[in-house]
Length: 414
Image (cartoon, rainbow, N blue to C red; front, side, top):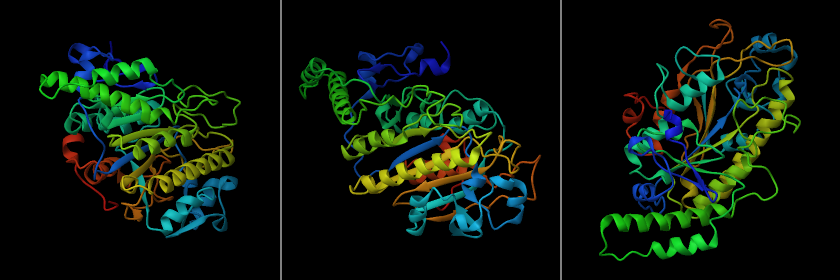
């Protein structure tokens, strides 16, 4: 069994979770329950929500340098006019579909990190996403960056990191611990199991420590099942399932999900319920826009904007929600020059957005030049590990060097 398979999670009545056990076995059983321990809410801790835009979002038509004449020369009919954009300053504007993020910018709750990628960028979806999810640009490693955070700081508890979707992304698989996956559209834990788990969770305080841990784990299972069950969809597909090519999504997903709002609804309910999770992963696919990009990307960015801003406005009504930080990234940007199909091909650097009440809004990193290109690609001006290091230190209260193989350079957006 390969490394990732050993770390996958079994779905149990709609709630999936587990850890990589000695010898490579993974199952939802007594050993796993003993390993998870118990937890009781995030308290004063911050929460990270990581949003992956699968397919390679076109950064130049997201954060648009319309004041630069070279932009129109390169983009032709794919270019936006300056008066169509939502101005941020420095000759840059947001895509017109991102009015909610513009308000966050005006409120100093949106940081835009420019020119983000990794050393020696790769145009492959698979390779590039593997680098972003493992935070290892130098070569393959068997763990994701949030999985390694779990190894160091999670206390063996997979519920500290939760992915909303059908499968667990590699970024949440550690060497000794992996996060949990919550699948939309699943059934709730059956009532008989709820009653059995509740009874078994009642362990005498003088019992053996392992029995107390088992009881606490069973109590946590019922708690998480109840917290997540209220957000399950009943009449729409699981966003982790493959989408029909004719469902109106013109961009290829390259691995992403749809229904971002439903995923964020799960996260919001979990935060409101005091679930102990510190890091969540959600995603949106469709950004591989080789043709007819303008309408497709504008629609997807509009969905992203609407769902993110609604989520933040909802959760900031609670103390825990006001400590939420959202980070949005894609595996690469697109080439500066438009192709012959009114689209753009795989590129390199792009912007990363960081949102939330704890965020110091503004620009971070330099805007890549449109005249100083490398092999017709944008130059990288910000190392993606600087973003991760900042999130690890500022949100997850962790020394980033422990997770990022010694990389601890941070930015000032937190």
